[in-house]
Length: 217
Image (cartoon, rainbow, N blue to C red; front, side, top):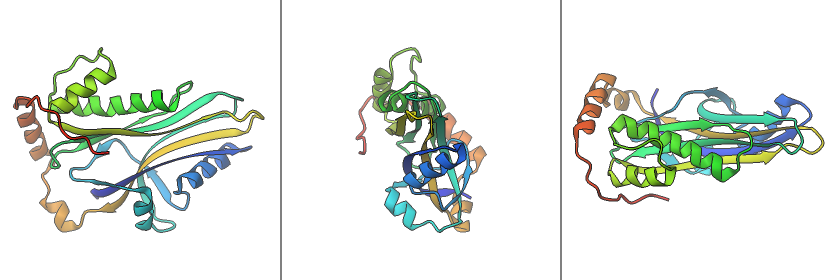
């Protein structure tokens, strides 16, 4: 199966029971009727990002949903938690991108989101052979990545919350949900893993163009 469309969503839930607080968070995210299967971090070549509402229209109750999910929970009053998904998309739609999960304690939306976005972008940059210093600040590296012409878009979706003051379980989730998949014909026409590795080798030897790319919002 190869995902061709993906949407992003987030939610927060509170309940006296841990599992029930997760259910409430899924309801807030709009994906509680799905049978969620968590997967790892590759955005397929050409996969289109759509809105949450567009994505939910393609889903059915009880459907198995392949999802990259970040999840965090606490029952400590006022403890700050967050869950974030970072996204990095290559300029070439024939190449794959990266999704990252981050689920920290003590981080705001902004800090957690920037970390997740940085993580996804750095994984993609190293795959594409972009030269960078991992010790420089994310803002600096973000400009280097995009100026290379090989990475066109990075973003994140993040949910944070403080633990309930009365000690209820508080759960946060952030998810990237695949909602449409390639047909057999489309799947068979796409490059194999060996073909893709050869293409990546070509990318690593290709000089960077040094021009900024338009960043989609």
